[in-house]
Image (cartoon, rainbow, N blue to C red; front, top):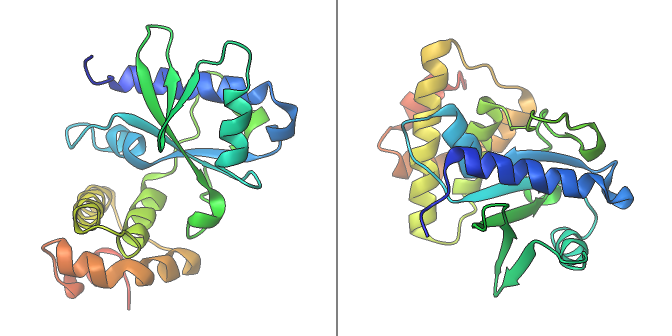
Length: 202
């Protein structure tokens, strides 16, 4: 089966949020779309992805969320080994990753209560927060390939953002950047001076 298109991934993300809205215990939890789908949204010609990544503020996530979704009558969700899938209306199985908020450096400003997500408007992480998350996660990745991908993604986002104006970071964002900056400098093909200049780090 062919890889899902951007529109198919967005439709799947909307459907998953609509399903979560029906579960009262999750209605006040906050959710944001992060990861590769956010990257595809901001850098259209850069690289694609095949899954939907959510950040969610649910105690015990991802297990508590997945268990609830799998227990639905005629559930459109499937767990296959470590992977979790949503079966879309056209029959395509789309991988869904659910990340608990404590695994992120901070809660992005785009995260909104599940009950408040408007139809047709996905709560995408902002491009600048996505850049920070990429830099931060580069330092935490277990494999060299994933570290390299995060560093390359971060460089592409930094180039795109700086082409639109000055990148201004909050103190929270700066501290998150500093945790992963050494790895990004080592792997991105750009030295520390380039990164400090791009991100206005003193």
